[in-house]
Image (cartoon, rainbow, N blue to C red; front, side):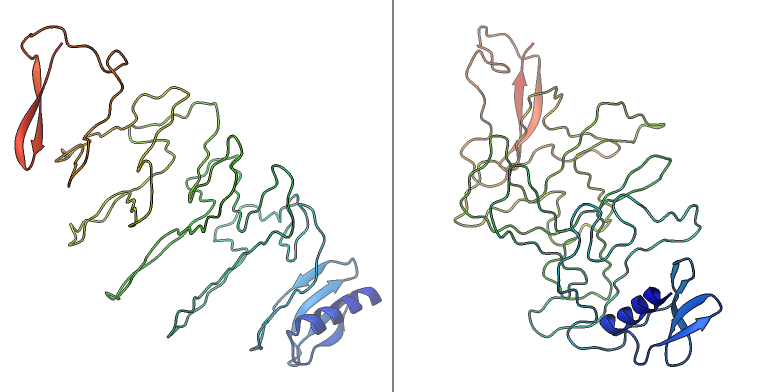
Length: 316
């Protein structure tokens, strides 16, 4: 038991969780007790550790400081709650299970930020091909029935009509420098890769599979403009395309506007001066064909030009 007592003493000394920790023999269990005599951590004769209660008092800059390196590898970690290859098995539960909880409150009168969890990595030398860095990685494996799952989830609740500037459920900033992209490389503020080869079915007609899903449920028309996706090109900036679809595989529609119950006013709106409304390939390349006859139009499509109703004719 001496090595277990040593472990307990080191734990109390390094973490500094207790003002006057003491060792106590409780039957076949060696325990760490606080100054009130309450057991907070124990190791039994078989080496089984039990953390009963840990309260960190008000401290200086760091409540817990890990200043050295630790074991590397996918199973390593400075703080490990179950390792990569060995999960802590809860079995069936009837309440939430929280692995890490950080709950802060406060205010600031300058440009400081509240950052409950901050992950940062800095390279110190060139890395080999296919090496990667991930500041935060959320992973879920679904092997049984499960209603909802989110590898990364953000939530913002607003009340009281506050003055705000930026409110983002997920925010990405990138300060780019000159670099060389690999042949299939990409630089993106948001990247989504959806893989698989099996069919996905639905018991109704609503279910969809999408790269990005936006469920707009706000009912107020609002004074400000609203949109599902907004791209802003700042003065002096350069952007080739606001929206681009590259299709090497099977693609049915590059753009699909569907009336599922309420007719949209316009499927496409062009506002302000534009050099061209559309850009098509040369005659002879689908969908552009050479005009050969003066037949009467088969029908017409209603459009607006300068706020006035006009029509585009079409032929068989």
